[in-house]
Length: 454
View 1 (cartoon, rainbow, N blue to C red):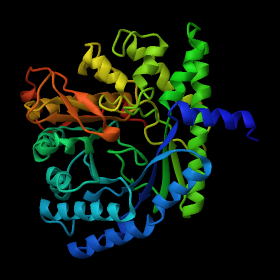
View 2 (spheres, rainbow, N blue to C red; view 1 turned 90 degrees about the vertical axis):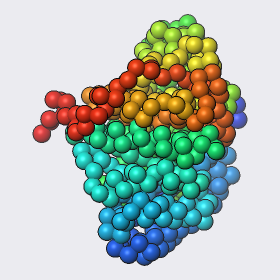
View 3 (cartoon, helix red, strand yellow; view 1 turned 30 degrees about the horizontal axis):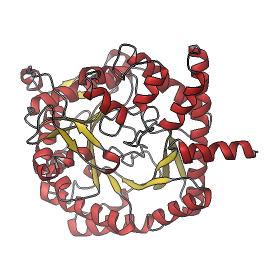
């Protein structure tokens, strides 16, 4: 039974510590929409999405009002579009028409983002997948709510370096295609290794082929709650610190479980997972970097940062996994630079570099996330960054990703403003030495020896 103390404690977290349910994401399978006629395919996709998600936003708002729990975003993820277009799409323009259909459906049902303009090419690319990837810059430039992701590697298959090379070029083309918005299109494009099938967070969400026809996934977030809890154990030993993080993560995840079950019941859709990631926002007091500083660092990026983040990530998972019937997605701690005021401050003070962020991604949920880099960065350099992150994911059997934004026309020392949850970011320097000969080799980096487990 929930007692009045727990109710009051949760209310305090919501009112003063930025606790929220970051997103309710409805995953929708579009496999039954496949048709060789492009017009009919688009019609099927639009009808399936608008039919399944017609009550999603209204239901989320009602749950938020009734329980007093902020539900910040309502979103949709769909089957990777590259899997649907093989018979109907004969050019990149054909795939762009599907992106516009997704955008139109998202606006119709009122969600803020729709993910799944995606291709899974960790071992090789079909012609359809290559066409979709080449269409990404135009698709993101000509839509508002569509998010795109490409999985270029996995522990089981290795890293598809042909796809890595291509994605470096695509990221740069997307930046140029949206240069009038400070290259905002790149904020909606993620390159993955070991992408999960049930991630509710954008921009990397897609509805995997292992999932049911329609499901509800929920992403919770509570960096501010964890930070406040840790203030109570300043100077205590690591065992006491870890116990506090676990207990707090349990409480935060219970809120997500409640919302997920209620949304599932009201929408008549199976509950999928709760993603218990600590996802920061630009709001004061809602920062993962501030948690690391509360643990004992002067600034995020100082010596000890990777160890502190490893501790935080592990304890969040240990506490959260007991609070939900199914934990999945990414689950851990996000370290996006533009969306975390503490990270921005650390960059501005010289404490945090891209190289340190790369080291931190060995132990966090995702990877190099929402990092603004100079607009004149070469495509091969971006490919090298993607390859490094994919290698971390492949060898460590975890999800890693790259969401970098080469801001066309801007350089180190300048700032770019994205607005809303995407925040703002100082443009960070990138290693200027070339990796072009490495990227140009082509082919595939083989899977590591520990991938053979059968």
